[in-house]
Length: 261
Image 1: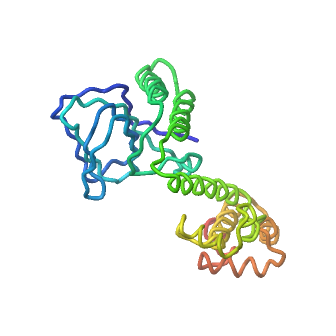
Image 2: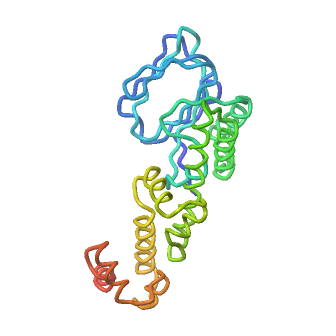
């Protein structure tokens, strides 16, 4: 996956009066590791942190923070994946303060990323992606959970995200019952959990991913509508056409014709 890096700095030091205030956030994600206690404003509330606090801002989230009567020292990376699904592989929350058990691991990777971004004699895209994945993985492994419930909920969300990723690859092979079986839950219990996590029902997600596959095949192949319907898991082409029209407002034939014009 391609990642756009907008900047990084290892062990950046500022005066104690230094303050960041981007009320509209930034167009990239911002990952921060603070060495010292900070004051961070989230959802209009000021939160005083302990040393080694971290936060991952998503694009557009207000970024307001300053040091708590001490030297301002932090590591940061500003980056934007070409696909936000990059974050699905990691149990790192957006716009939420968390702490790590081993800050030294984070620092080493941050130092490498800073070096690769400033050393311009060679292309370091591969190394940058590798180090970013290591940072995210290390944060995931070393993240402290305030309560057992929080940890359990985070692990459940991670497992759901992994399952959702698998469904998106081959949606025609999945049903809600099969997804529920992976969690050893009833269909109804799983559906409630899934909607609470992602805001949509698992059945709606399956339909969405199937439709995405149909659009991709219509755009990139010369397969017949009949063949595409079969690859999308439909036994009857008429049912596929009906479902496609419901999702997109036009039939597969009309869609392909419009794209060809």
